[in-house]
Image (cartoon, rainbow over all chains, first blue to last red; front, top):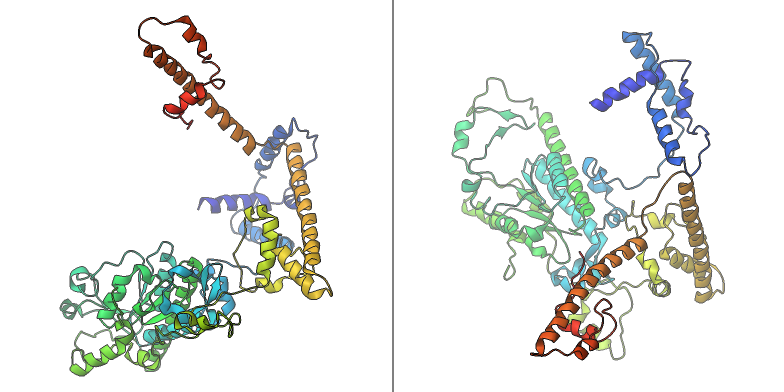
Length: 334
Length: 256
């Protein structure tokens, strides 16, 4: 807020036409030539810095709307003059795009997976031999995961997430390692599901009544809006269980995956060369230690969930769903 | 944990059984999905991807047919590995330079044209020498690996020398426009050593005085002047037998 005010004040000072300080001088990067030697270099530096901050304020002639519009015109002019200046950056890796604008499953290429370090496994002595079919070879003492196998498994997992979301299933995204919270929250938001980035409390599924019994439950319509009037029915209802669990670090979440197995809940997980692939229903052989790789996979699965949600809502609207009627009560057959 | 638990792979069968027996009334939302897209085969060994030919005859041939060896992943070999070993063996301090292993889109290597050793947007490195040498070996007719290596590394040396000149000139420019630099790491190291030396000297003085007293008190009765004459001046503890006696006692204190 303070910055904005400062800029506006600066802007007003800058763009008021005054003979004493023409605007072209602001583009001039040359310093004023003075006799600078090694001895008086420090003082010369300080004097120069001091001279730049004391910008003289010209008396303001225009007021109100005409001032704003003239300032805006000058600003547009300035932009036009300076747009061609500066350097253009080549396309490069921007970490935040994996969270804010994640790629969709059809944008996943082997080059993208390699740049995200998805092929780097663990030391050869630490492997699980069950993972042998996912490994491309050995290089510099570590196993290299085969990226076409990774891509195939990732696309399969994405189809599962999309289809489950299309049928209104609840997807739980789990990532309990440090730094995995952002991607997991974002993926859950896109897919309309739930997220977990702190420790999984053992028994949340098998002993859900005890651990999650106090959590609020609500009934929503096809577009996600809450429907009132179901409070009495929800009292006796068992706690919700997820319909699909996506885990970014299965090695640390054995209890969660075991509970899902006991309750017949399908799971998706990133399986490194030292992880057991039988712990999850749909393994994605990839590097779970690289945050870039985890962000990519979570983003892709989130996007797939988003697609599923869109399809579901489109189908609901097509079938003539326009939302609950205003006088609807719970228990009404409609 | 324990033996194989294949329940995650059998979620669909479990759900089918629950439906059949009436434990659940309606199928879960994922039921049709998992039926249509089943999990992939797990825990089955396949023949590994061939990186190089396995021996079919000779002493190692039997090993390639044993199940314990047949399914092992193979080592990935590159032509550049030998060249890297040679370059970094000859220039070990190049390994101390920081290396950026971040890639942009995975196609970074395709943008490089190794007809020149310096690439825009890519740091000059031992890897540049190796790639340049490989390019010369493949594109220049009748050039031996040694000649290619010599040419590549001389181009590399010229560019490194240029970098050194730039660094030196930058420092001179900075000094002339008013920058001042702190102590170099060598000066800091010398100061730390001096500090440690002073601490050690204090300890040594105290130890030598204590040893002298111990020796003096060992003789009960008359103390002869000639005994003291054998004792070395404690102010100069390095010279003389003091050094061995100091080793018997506790070690000198370390300056923190």
